[in-house]
Image (cartoon, rainbow, N blue to C red; front, side):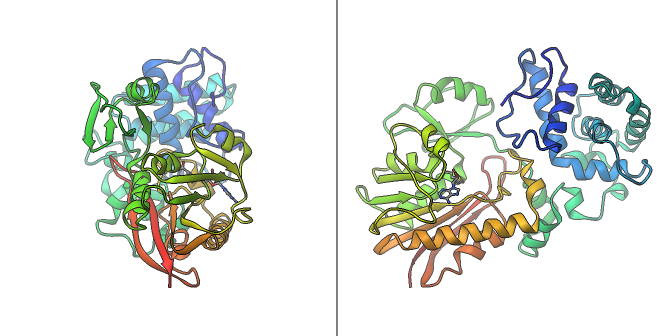
Length: 411
Ligand SMILES: C[S@@+](CC[C@H](N)C(=O)[O-])C[C@H]1O[C@@H](n2cnc3c(N)ncnc32)[C@H](O)[C@@H]1O
């Protein structure tokens, strides 16, 4: 998806317009954001960083700005311009403070809001006065004196209050490190297809069997991914396919139903392992976009038109994406009680329906890209007539996104 805005705009203005479109619901996702034509190289990189960073840390930046603003509603353009200044001041070490303020205020002028620049400029300058000259840690908190950091963990890390409640005391110490990791964008990871040579490249950071991590995603995308030697797949997603083989003990030739298959990452991995995979999804458009090599079918997982008899049924359920907030920072905006409860209901229905399709002695595998216990253990551990064979929660980090899987067997 191409960001809004005329072609000759600079990165801050493009970021301001994109964040406005997100706030107004015109732009639903940031994960497929592409810079507009004319914005290239480091400028495109800066725009992306500002968009993802401001969407991630909006709560922290608003909390800081509120020290200097009159109470009451603020025009969205001014709020966002102040966040742009704050992100440059606190998170991006390469932008000098005076430039951080001037460019954010300049963007406000470019989007036709010169009347909002006075207050924005004053607040951004005051924020600049709070900035530590020497960084004391990573991220925006590393530029804030300890006594100026918010008490609320949710505000400190830009997370929804409800997610903190749902995580409860399940977090290991130090909690701040764990919460900060939720905002990490892991390096791009590829899986080499069976029989293909291992990729080479100057930006390769690490390898592990068929897995390769890349410092420069474009090198992978334009090279081994474009020519089909590798597929983009996060390591955490790969673990789900491994669980189908190792914990659920699927053997080459076994029939696997992937009930929520699009865009087809796990189906492809299972097929590469020699399983006979039926890749179903409710969305016609998404089924169309899945790779041709898969056996694709349109089907509502809650009313599937298949006979029972699969050795394994995989439910990679729609979820809150709280394990991939680094790549999808906007997912945090949706995480409220109504949304979460709706997801849990859908996840439970899909799992119940999937259970009815498993052959006697077969296995059920449940997976999400979420770290939220109600969507994970809360769904997998309470399926009547089934017990847990194994489960795994991946926490996001430098080389892996967050996610969960559980393997179930009839009790
Ligand atoms: C997390 S994604 C699956 C990712 C996929 N397994 C992969 O590895 O590439 C969840 C999918 O569930 C699909 N979905 C949502 N509701 C569904 C339903 N009622 N029946 C089947 N699929 C559904 C969505 O269209 C979406 O493609």
